[in-house]
Length: 392
Image: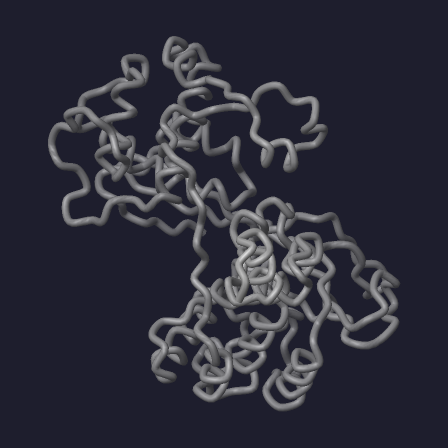
């Protein structure tokens, strides 16, 4: 089965394979593959990066067509000019307007675009195309302290890859937290036990929406001393399954296996009493007994009732509930941001606890995004008074 998404003359095409996995490529208007783009995207097959790169790369390829630039004639200044056209700050003439009527890329999208373009042209150079541009792009820099913390054997690293197209300056992401009392307001605004489960599991579990919608019933060990033997407390296993019928995939790809109906491995996450309570409320009151797919979240109404709930369905439910609660559009990842920040505060700033509770890749990432000091903290106040030496 093939679903096409039109993006100008070139288009991104999603391919649904027989084994349930999805991939993305770029095709010409008549339906033939764009060979250079397809070869590059195949390198990232089986990852969420492939889809992101496809939509960023198709924009760049359309711009190359308009500028009449071939791959072997592109120079670094052309790529810098393109980055300026889509939103980066560059000091040079940009030429004719591009993407008229669309907002410029944000900082995160610009960083991803820079990585995509560098990867694409380095891949072209590996095939013998425009090796001179490859030399201009393939730069290195000295490693920072954060680089050394993240990398295996980081203490012996002497250089790190650099990207001349990346936005300049230090970038600190500011996560969008939920306002105080938002969880209770959303709970009051939802209409079913399933929706209450979604809110509590996002809020208390710090789950990504793909992880939540990708859960199977066998992944849930909601009693003490479960058979897996990996956690004595009630917990769940986040398992990466690319063939889920609702298209949901966990971002983390820890190895896992199922033997005798018991799942082991994956990302093990503790569950709260409220998560257990909403699970049994949902299973005893709304979950269809005739369901054969074994997934946790299902659609409750309409012709597709009983089929697995897709992440887009959960997002739309939360958006509607947020508007009814007077909060505007509530996004699933806001719960994850609030959860990680709350765990970091409750643990006294212990990055390792916050990393493992939220399933983050590294403690350095938690520190960069969520590390902060409460200016009202008595310890913070005492430290300043000691330094100042003021008599209050």
